[in-house]
Length: 584
Figure (tube, rainbow, N blue to C red):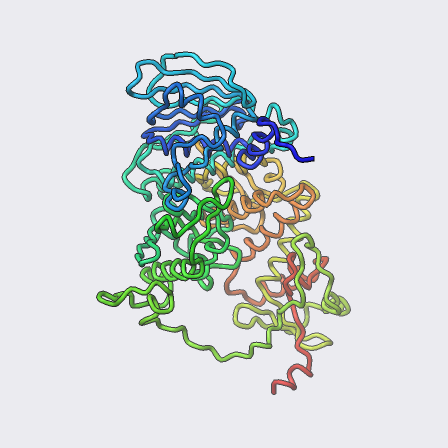
């Protein structure tokens, strides 16, 4: 039997789409403040928004009538007819945010317009108007959201820890801050400032204020205009790529959006410039006509749809390649095309003058370290490859075998089955992995204390990740201490790590990447040990002499599984007489 749902139930359903967590409230209300013309916005949260979320702005404010009406569903000043949906230039436009927030919390709004001498205070609980009365208040709006999800206990129960929820709030706050540098923005958690950003002239100054001068000093500027799309922004140098993917931002017409597809357009030009698994930094601002992009495809407005996504993909990729080329990170491209007609597709706009990389003659079918199949991330103990784990076990004089180091990358030694070829980097990785894993299991880490402790300024999200897991971090051999103001001091690193500042930063990045994976406690030690082993092995990459090669081979043969790395890549291979006969 069909029936129309009561208003309070329909409001709860809408709230479930718009308000997923405290960060959703922060996002919606800060965006409303921006749309109201605010020059200053303050966000204050208590208990990561569970107890209180307060948004104060100096925008245009509302009249007493508007202050009551704004809590009704689809009450909006942004659109009035269907055609307006094709030219949206504001953050909010559907009028669902305040109605959704009021459905799952207790809300108090104090607001005043400049032309009014007295403001109004409106109290709404579970979508019901409780009271409205005149009040003395500054021009603008002051929202207090208390006891979020108090009437939806299932939703409140499944909120994560305060630290995890605060990280989501910081992310939403940062995304708005990066698009509105001319607005002063402040974020307070439990009475402590996390960000206090003054108004600045441009985005790069705001990026510097949020992420620090260390990140911005090597940013590469982008500037591209086509008839379809304008691109400006900044990308990171390849050497600044990190394991974590936190500093990757795409904006369209001043609105943040998520898109793995367009992220790929940015990262493709870096493919041969950064190690596998590393992520470049980018802050890319796209501008196009509003009728070429649909921002109404997701309730939280974090996804968009372009009229011609393939063309946009090509333009972004070309712009990033141009930026890297101008900074001498890739082969030079001639972009001096004054007077040439503008055609927005990649093939005609950016192709003239491109210097193709030289072709290399090689045998594509031969890769002695190619693994068959792929091991999932959940399996860190690959099955031994037949015979490899017994290469030297049957010989009492295993280390008396002749041994040579070839090309600084391989150890070659004869066995009964043929020539054993050992990948030095992966051998180190396997040795380090088993050493780190054992330290965690026995809770007896070996810490290399540094003579000169390294102080690192982190993003608030990364800082909170580390502070929340100091016990697990210590079990891996890290000696990290709080320095305040989102900074840490690294006094010691696990055995095998080089203690210079660059490698300390790399080790902390590996640590943060593992923490962000949010693995169950049982899997965390394996995931982190695998990451750390790979990182430590790279630090030792370089020339190796015969005594060290013999020691490494001996250590490898003492491993439980010397034939493969923790994530399943082959450490050694055998070149038999038959293999050599085929090539000679």
